[in-house]
Length: 263
Image (tube, rainbow, N blue to C red; front, side):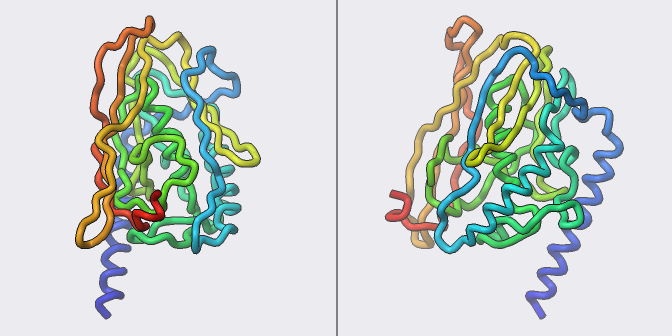
């Protein structure tokens, strides 16, 4: 009985928050970036590749094949997007609900900190890619939800731990705003093995950004293993002169694997 009540409360909470987010989106629809172009803007700012497939103990490989299909559907809504000055990028505003009726399949999701199956699973990887690109441009992150748990040990990780984003429709979104004078564009596609994400700009960038981590450590506590780090961003001018370094995120997450597996 208690478990059923908890599930009902969770469903009601999500439902109310999703309705509120939908109402807010409708009231502010003119603020969002929606225009797209199949022609690349002239200046490539950053390219990022993420492996689609991973070897994870206890995870059905079919979920990664399904993730590929889910990524294809979402990318079709995002590829070529132009983010003009003053506009806000919203992942869910563009992608829409990842339901089976819209062709989405069961992929890998996190359910209360545990790997599970869920329709639309795998789209967090798309959010991770877009966030990494945004951190290399003059785009201000206005909504980003971090992962409170580190589920799997590093497997060909190409960016520092703690630079990802958790998303849940239409509750946890990924959003950033273009406060600059420059227009940006996102291009996305899949290869046999990778999700490839690129960001372009209409004019040469006035600032260059370099992401790094510090204070990385695994910490053993009585209730398990934890991982921490700090994500930094160094800002340089167009000539390459260092202007300043800023702290972006401080991460502290419980690991769902052992220290031996991490090494």
